[in-house]
Length: 109
Length: 183
Image (tube, rainbow over all chains, first blue to last red; front, side, top):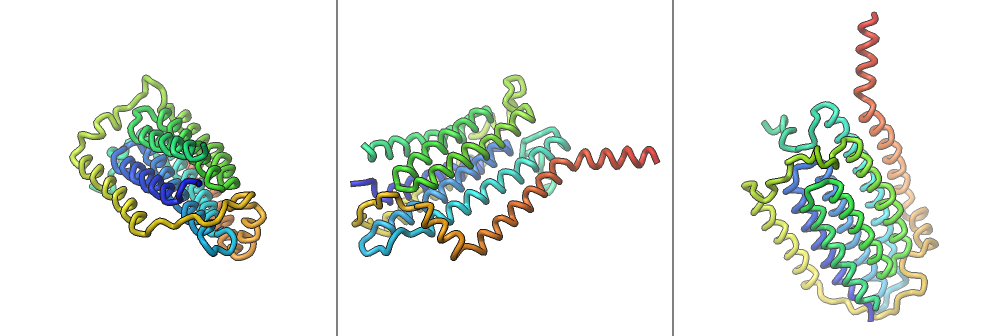
């Protein structure tokens, strides 16, 4: 008897909550980007859990491939987001010599 | 055996995720995230997604993490002397308590949604080659999902251009300034 897919979903929600907490708590831009990656990974995990649930249930017509396909798209988007985000971090550091988000609040004030 | 490995890897991934949030040094954050990605790849493998596990390691652990490490080393943020006090008082900010409560609520909502949807009994055996066979994935990707695939490839091209422009901007300006000075 293999692990129920629901446990994968619960793991995904734990990872998403941890990533969201880090996103709001941290002020280092690079760590904030890492927390976004963590949340995207949680989304991937829940896509795969749903796909597994539908592939193995009674009367399923073959594997549900929507989950893995969307997970691949999410991975591509995550790579794009990391590349653009880190390029912005480099541009920010070049202009301000900081990666602290509290020192970059011109739009807030 | 496989079940025990799944729960062990779930524990490792949650511990590593907490490490990302709580570690002081950005290098420690990156290494924790790497551990989380490897644990998740193992979970994908155990759940029957071999191709996704390989992609997870190749793209996330191989490419994205190297990008993060590269930027941290480029900006010299991991040096012990340069350890900034950015997040030293992470939990003593006024809204930290609220953030933790909201994250906890997110978690409870996720768990409730899973519980409410009911347990779907896995009636069929796992197929021998897993769920995401490369054959099936390619058929879907270049059939029904051809348009999103092309859109994503355009997005990647645009990103490559955008990153070069963003990272090179300073040099272009200084060259222009220098040329203006010469004129």
